[in-house]
Length: 259
Image (tube, rainbow, N blue to C red):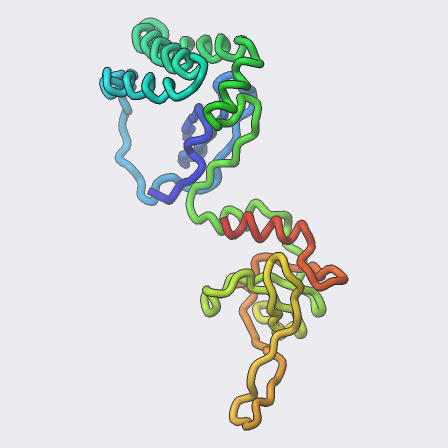
């Protein structure tokens, strides 16, 4: 399988055969109206064709020890909100299992509708207590495959590489340096550009980098200039602030790409 992340956030998934390709859709809740499509292939290799049997839910893994652990954990709080929450949760799971044979699909929707109709204030308090997201909070998209490739594809349309503008790179040659920032000084070809490296950090000012001249004594330096392939450039077409810092929207893109 391809690597996958953020898949613990949605509660509902569906996989559809579209033009011979398995396409995955997700929703945060079963009552949400809009499906979110996942880019990328979940499986690296094709699977044998044939019917897939439906698997009914099972509570075999939820034994007395799990329930006792939850009640013990809840005892550390002053009120009974935590214990009541887990008691209700396990009872609802049992209802789902008992109702599966009669209504294998609709019981889940009915249960979610019921839970969303409960007292909002109490639900919010419990969410804060548990440290979990509230019902209407947005969730990050499911990413299938390489995170960096997904982040780059989700970014705004790439600007044209122009002389005098800055670029961000992801070059394995300097994998221990992050972010990798440079200024384009010459368009060598459609596939190559000449850049002047800059030194700094995401939250500090950036200045032109220099290096020692080869074969020259006395510690003389020269601008740190290199020719790179454009395929290592993932963000382009921006300028530094008057104080030499990265603009805020570029900092945000650095965070997303790095994650």
